[in-house]
Picture 1 (cartoon, protein in one colour):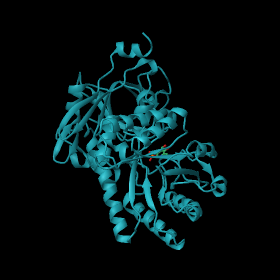
Picture 2 (cartoon, protein in one colour; picture 1 turned 90 degrees about the vertical axis):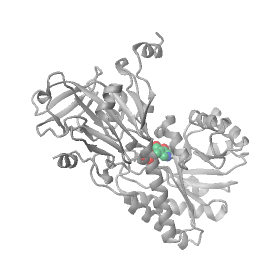
Picture 3 (tube, protein in one colour; picture 1 turned 180 degrees about the vertical axis):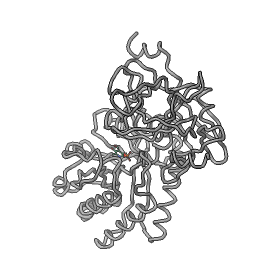
Amino acid sequence: MGKSYKKFWKLGKKEFNTQIFDINKDDELIIREGNYQYNVFDLIKRFGSPMEIFMPFILEERLNHLFDIFSKRIKETKYRGKFYYHYPMKVNQNKEAVLPLVSEGAHLEVGSANELTLVKRLWESDSMHTKIRVLCNGPKTKAYVDLIFAMQEKGLRIVPIIEDLEELNLFKEFKGDLGIRINLETKVKSHWDKKFDRFGLSVDEIIELGKIRNLKILHYHIGSQIERGADIISAIKDAFKYYQKLALIHPSLDTIDIGGGFAVPYEKKSMYEIEGLSRSIINTLKKLSEKAELPHPNLIVEWGRYIVAPAQITVFKVVSGKKVPNKNRRWYVIDGSFMNDLLDTWALHQKWHIVPINHLSANKRNLVWLAGLSCDSDDAYTAGGGYILLPRLDDLDPGEDLFIATLDTGAYQDALASHHCLLSSPVKIVLQNGIVTIARKRESPEEIGKLFGW
Ligand SMILES: Cc1ncc(COP(=O)(O)O)c(C=O)c1O
């Protein structure tokens, strides 16, 4: 019985990143870390809801898998360039996310002076290997530029990525390696494929560019959650044309940074996978560079959500239910907020996979829309007008509550979180090596008041 419900809720499947989830004999959700297991229902009893559960062991597994796959591809194709992973800090700047990745061998990418300030703290406390490399993207304010120069002087391998022609002047005297970002004209299927992209130098500017001292990296970022693997390959082919042109006058140029964009199967539908895509990437780069009679370039990827999203789930209690007027749906009101704590639900109609935490084997279910606790009618999750299936509240025992988990919430949501209606952010716990720690306490009404000057 448990087995078929596991399949029904799409748990235990590697291709959906749900291989860590299972259902125990009491119909409750469990999380496995190797042979250790955590009972999510018990965690709620200990720490309450709403709650974020962060799992660094997943980050470590995913990053190591990425390294293994690319090293395998490099070996089997006799590729002579190197593979580097730079973790884009914007995806999740929390210490519990950044440190495990650095410790597994990630380099870093930052997008602001404040993110670089966190790197500075790691550097000054002697907590980082000196070989780590930091790429600096984003528009360069004076504070950002000054910090880049200061960190370079302290010996950090820091690479400013030039965003526009003016920045070229700012870094004229820079002694280390430089990168340059190109605004490719390739179109990909993604929410972020804007008609007018504002990042990087235009293709024409790149073509007309004179010689840049110490140019090492050609970078682009073409969008996040790219829906088709083939688009990632088209972008590489497009970028290579400019790499080839630049390489003619810049012997120091030896690296292509393809940015972020690898998608996460949030909706638990099949999509492209790393095994196949890594093969196409390396084969493409090999063919293009050999045809151009250039050395195989080093490859940098900055895939953020791919590594981080599956490392967190967000847990809510259902506090009440009612019928949606004139529609075969029921509202389930949760004790947290989509608008505050899973903000992309509101901002870009992000879809999530939502599963019950208890009563996983209930065979009678409602078609449900979820409503957040704030007063805002936009604070809801309707699966894009569809529905989610959840156990019927009428079937619960008196005094019993239904809990639900939103999967894959590790990327971007924390830094975007807000305090509409002065709701408290969820408590955040971390699971690692069988030990449960609190990373962020539940905010008290007084603490929230303080944020607003009370
Ligand atoms: C320059 C750059 N690199 C990497 C990323 C990470 O993208 P993703 O999380 O889609 O992999 C972003 C996201 O906006 C970005 O702007």
